[in-house]
Amino acid sequence: MPYKFLHFHAPHHHHRDSTLLTEGAPRKVITAFAFPIFLSQLFQQLYNTADAWIVSKYLGDEAFSAVTSSGSLVFLMISFFVGASMGAGVVISRYFGAGNHARMSQATHTAVLVSLICGLTLTLMGSLLASYIPGWMRLDPVVQPYAIPYLRYYFLGSLALVMYNTFKGIMNAVGDSRRPLYFLIVSSVTNVFLDWLFLGPMGLDIRWAAIATTISQSISALLCLRQLSKRGTVYALSWSKLRMDRWSLREILRYGLPTGVQNSVIGLANVMVQSNINTFDKVGTAACGAYSKIEGFAFLPITSFSMALTTYIGQNLGAKAYDRARQGARFGIWSAMLMAELIGVVVFVFAKPLISIFVKDPESIAIGVRQAHIEALFYCLLSFSHCIAGICRGAGKAFVPMFIMLAIWCVLRITYITIAMHIDHNIIWLFWAYPLTWFISSVIYLIYYLRSDWIHGFEHSKQLA
Image 1 (tube, rainbow, N blue to C red):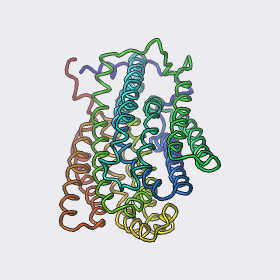
Image 2: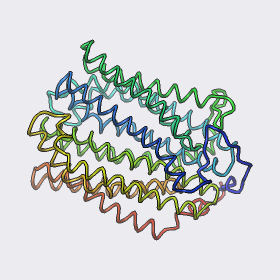
Image 3: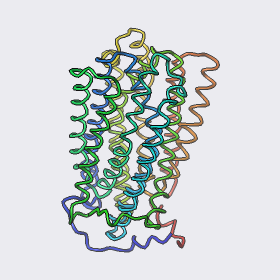
Image 4: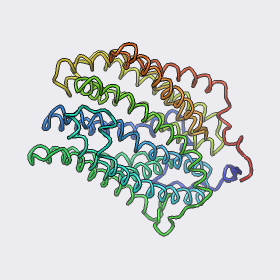
């Protein structure tokens, strides 16, 4: 493909709604860009945690298990579309770094139209399949009556969720990670307030926990849309310009599909792991649900740095700043690993009081603590794998993390669990599946990072369109 835009250096116009990550000290630029992403992830995690805690407080452990065990399946269905929208971010960040605003506008409008179609498809699929999902996941029969209505109403918010992620991806691609943070804070606070109002004072059922989420997701999507539609901004989204530009669509799919597939594959593996967890009755389901809420906090630095690295690498390779891309990559990897490991140590030490926030049953608490003690000290490996994957995506090598995650985090993990459960039906073998596969993927990523020429990824694909 002819990357003509890489040779196109129009004068850079500085908009207040965008930040070039090709100027300034890499360490400062990456930190300043990653920090709002970190805060937005933190808010999302806090609101998810508050959401689960409110459900547990007002509706009991069965409802809590329904909400947390549905999480892996919701992630599977939504993650494909969220991953695909990352492809748009990679394309837009490169055009922006190269100063090609015409191409950037085409890619932006194509991405928004694709997301609209995907969001509507997901809403329809989710609503139709909601009543079958808990059965497929072997959920405890006492949990199923809570899970079905929750899922049905949750999927009604799919369009808003997909659109928010696309809008956020567009803003991040041009270096604006602050505004999506503000919009997310508004939506998170709204969600927690509505959860408390519906389930507490109003005494409504679990459906209303999902409705609260749908309302608040719609608010954040609309706030993003308002920002993107402002005239004179670098993105200047206009409904009349929404069309499928074939070139942009090809580029977005080329970088987005591997990430979408990779996310779905990890999601599928998680669903299969969750189905195995569900065989340990509601005690095991509640314990792992509680641990997953805590592990979410370890993902904060990991996600923020890996997303920041994707945009940073994309913009700098677009501007042909190779040494700068390498420098930033090193800094991002070390920072994310250090922060993830520090969180891991805290989780390891304070496992019992942390798990007790969500579940009261002593048996569930003991299982949750065991999981934390097995997995928490390996968060640095999880972080390393995600950061290299982020760098690969920014360098246009999205197929690399897709194949590694597919082979190790899906095929190997599921094979190991199936064999281990067959030999000895003990939940501990399930927990060891994670550190084991994180270690193997990290070794493969390290070899790829040191040995391959990822830095010139875009030049190698200059075939004719």
